[in-house]
Length: 200
Image (cartoon, rainbow, N blue to C red; front, side):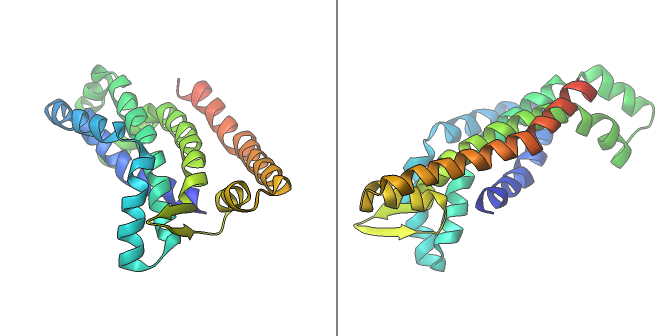
């Protein structure tokens, strides 16, 4: 649930921003370097600050965990979507406009099919980054206080750093492997095959 929430929040802002950047070269020259600098900051470096601000403001470690996972996902989506926008030939976009294709039809016929392969590639890598962030996001030590949000990441961290429970470490890892394998086979592989077959 945390990964899904972070993914849809990431998608909600990266998709329109990538389309805007792809259609406005001047803004692309301004915004792309800013995003590249922001993306170069390790997500884990932001964790103590996010926990401090969010816990103090809301008292919710669940919200903090979603925000922390978001920092590990969003840049994969953004840069893949920007690359997808740049890969759509300008001639094609101009031709569609000259034929009067606009609004939803323009999006459905040109923008979304052109972005679909990059969206799937960005989504797969974003979820990979999200799983990595999740392990740390559910168990954060700040100023000598441990903050946890119940989940597989917290179980793994507690078993590793507190109890030394090797059985729980193994079970946590196996459950993550199982979840990732099922998602890859049931969701990402069919979507990737669709992208390569239909929208190449």
